[in-house]
Image 1 (cartoon, helix red, strand yellow):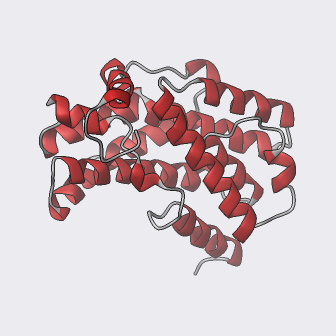
Image 2 (image 1 turned 90 degrees about the vertical axis):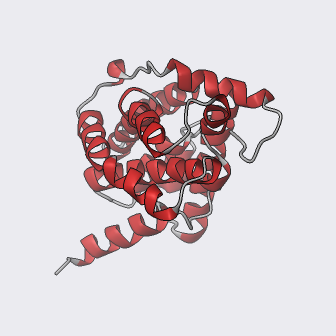
Image 3 (image 1 turned 45 degrees about the vertical axis):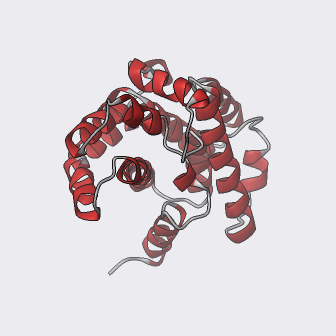
Length: 229
């Protein structure tokens, strides 16, 4: 039997990080659209490999670290650190479209949380951040609502991975069963990324997914587009 606090935390996690939560994640591909056109991603196996690298060495890991440090700063009521984390996270995106993606989702997440799930301290914490990207928004709101870090982090990475797979499934395309096989195959990668991010310092943030960064940059001039990034 869940305690009242555990039940509330689970309910909010399932809501906030559901594909139905209206942050517009379905309209972004994080450069996957260009990678499909370029032939880097052509089937389930290549999609799985691309996303595994994004999780371990790219945006997945970096965003997870930013979430962790935003959550901890709010827990400790350390607004100076929260400002530093928000500033670094906003500066860490490699392209204009990736910045649009993460800032638009961050703003939407905060606004919906404020409107439907308002809680004391939320406005004050948000006011410390000049720009709020998506992982910082999730970490900040999660801490304000006293959601434990580990399940919040795991749910965030699951949501991000699911959105990437959804984009890939529409672009390649893949069937629903094949898409779920990709998600199942990435379970251990998500778990390992969450564990690594939970103990990482901000000095350890870094990306080596150059092809993914180029995909995000190239998407800006792609002739036909289904997605915004």
